[in-house]
Length: 118
Length: 392
Image: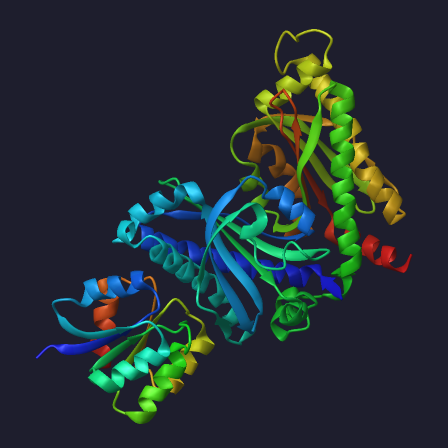
């Protein structure tokens, strides 16, 4: 059974890119455009992995990660973001993220991050 | 508020580092190499910026900043280059605005990482906002309304494709003020001995106005000596790494005159035309067509023009600063643009890494003869003169 992935990114371009990278090897259970949708979709689909952007409208990715990992401590969230600030990385890890990749990325970066996290 | 020019140098290094990160990110996204051409901080009024950006149509992405640095950052490029950019992105042609927005988001994220890491504080970015704008409307909010703002600007050029990006960041005065006055531990460490180079912001703003007036004087002098109608297209006071100046002038052949300034402040001044522009101006000054476009007669004419322009430029400084500034006899230069200014930069670089560059673009009507004036004052002497100005 394929690993189930939820993509959370406000950029349609980036969601498409991630979908292209993951398609075939993973099952994409949903695509969220903001942190609130990400939390709701996580509750609905219970994915194995969440690829989470940080800068998103309504609720950012760090807040959404904290909410997801608080309700499900076994959740696996990988931050997938343009933000490479050390303080933000620390905040993401503190919120419960398992990994962190910065955009732009290539397919091997994404697969390595998923491989390390699961 | 006092501005420490060394701390401003530290800020500029961050902007340079950020621009390189952004260039790397863009290169990876588009598959084409990008070079950071120039990064500098300019102190400009809204009016100056509106003039400088007139006629440009830009597409860009804007991001609001909070936390370690507050303000706004914009990645912009020529509207005519959108299709070229989209063709380089995977699936970009069908994604249009979303692809452009994400490119801006990624590049600006890279640009800001260095600032955040340096400050030891996170910078919160708002979701990116796509924008299409005419003229200076592409600049961050507030750039056009203040009496004078610090605007960080980096230009990134693709080496193999017709793509040029610019990053503009307009920091709000709050946290940024601590940076430029050298009040943060990081700025203090990088800024070194900050006491001797701190100047009142108001004096710096006055100096920017002087630079503008000097440019207008120089343009009038060209007009008087050649009979050509002249206008000052751009006049800005920027703070840039000295090593960037030759790159900025470029490799195209230039001709003009260079001067050493003596007094307070000392420094250097270069008046440069394109090769053809110099020939056109010289021809306009001479009673008959010279035998050679840039032969001895033309050189003499350009040297005389340089003399008058330089006086027009520095007299205003000396009068307002209450100092005496003289200049050396003109030295005619005719070479690749970068080679004409490299010796000046090399001399000034013994004393400082960064410099206030006053660049003025003067355009003549009817005859193609754009002229760029680069004034490179000694930073310590300028700081001392501005300090005295604040007590006057």
